[in-house]
Length: 149
Image (spheres, rainbow, N blue to C red):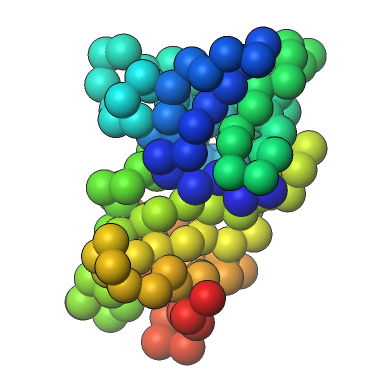
């Protein structure tokens, strides 16, 4: 399922906001939660829902109910926050800003990331098999990993 930042988020048939970001477990390479707010930006008004409670229908993100409680995360692991402010970097050069992610439905496993250099440029599709997720605010890719979508 493709989670594109800025997509409308619905809960119980009512629009509750726009997708502002995704919380990611870098060790397991899976999405944990979606983050949404009325204006689609991160901030004090943002809310979260676990990825297991999310479905995508066309361009809409729908919260489909309350999933079973997830096990607590280990204390040594800090999740990453991916949002439109996250840089996609190749070498030392920023090639795009993150525009969304593709996750496996149910498990939340990260499959691909989408980026754009600007609003008018083509969307880049980035496989997440062997990217570096160790830096906050950055997704580092190798020279041969991005392809135009």
